[in-house]
Length: 437
Image (cartoon, rainbow, N blue to C red; front, side, top):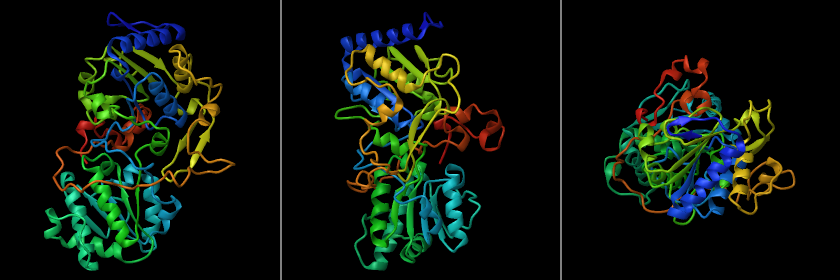
């Protein structure tokens, strides 16, 4: 606990009572809507579910995992890869939008590399030409603020080929480039095709427009549309409901200083959010900032630090990009007085007097998450997984760069791995507002 600007070590009971009493007082003075939780998609399904349940049980709808996003349109379903991971190996044509595939998603890149060896035509829309260790047949380079127009150009080329109306008018649609035509031809040929949206596309200010265009192209060409997903549990975070409810604040609003109390679960906003180095100023109006982390992090602007176990030291569940549910056990005991985050959240809810938090194990928590497979199933219900989009396509150029992180800057664990930081990739900028697409 930080008291008078000085950190003091206390026992768990004292720390949790301090947090509970502080939250109660802030709720009494400012209302539950002044309290929120920013959670990491690297957290387990159980942790994310309890963080959201705690907020909602306390009367707040302010919870969000989309820390690096610039747009916060409501999802119509749980966004995912759109196909099985294995299917990537047999693609005949693929368009990757907004990803340094080899570095952002090396295991997916290996699958697509296998497909390329068998003749798959790989296309890309990106701001720079990255080395993917595979042949890229068609590369359309464009500043990230014009990716919507670039993808609209591909759509226009497909529309012209099929004699149908293009989904958006203006921009590059009237001057379709040769590369857009080549990508269109690639997607119109063959049978097994995919349009994959990378981290920068998911975090883009015009993410909804990119998805709407991708879906239109997919419908016209027979290509599946999916997200490569940023973190180990991006799909799980959606399934767990780690997004704001009715009238709740999204991550962007919470990071910009709208809260009096903030819970930070497994993240360092200076490195894990779109605001980057501006994060501390966003918390300047908060009366209490509580960090739950395996590390001594967020010390400059936190008031309480609760040491929680990383995923290796706790049981839990991740849901991967294709919707496969993967539960695991701890491989080592938690260090010192560290506690699993699900236990910390459960006890905190108990101290706040919230009903429905009588859990004895992470498995008990898991049973409360909707949509999980029953009777030994391995995947989330297919009815929950979809990448549908709604709304109009906005061809206005974006005003900000997408917030993306280099491979060894993606989370608090890899940022502290000395061996990884000594590599060329580890020397890349780690602050979100320093990294370009």
